[in-house]
Structure formats: structure tokens, C-alpha cells
Amino acid sequence: MNFLRRTHFILELPIADRKILKYILFEHKRYQLISLNFESIPKS
Image (cartoon, rainbow, N blue to C red; front, side, top):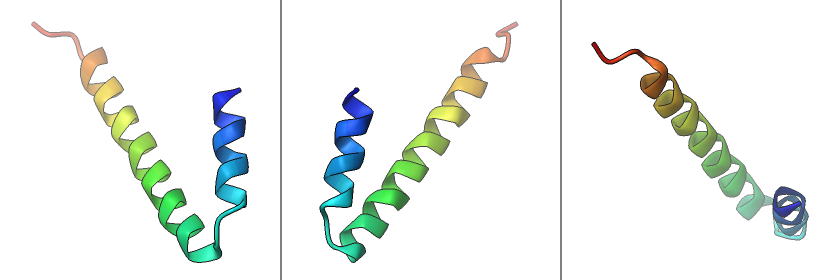
């Protein structure tokens, strides 16, 4: 639900700000994936 609100917020922004936010969201997701993969590696 929070994600939908955030998406709606992004849609109301000017195009330039939207591009910046999309980039930030993309990088954040990628960072989360990297850290998730890192955590899933068994620590021996």
C-alpha cells in the first residue's frame, strides 16, 4: 500500500524529478538485491 502511495507521489512530480527518483529507486532495489545475495551466501 505504501508503494502505491509513493508511486502516486512520483507521478505528480515534474519529469526531471521523476527520472531522478526512478534512478534512486532502481539503485536502491539493486543494492537490496546485492545485499540479499550477499547474506544468502553461507558463511563458513
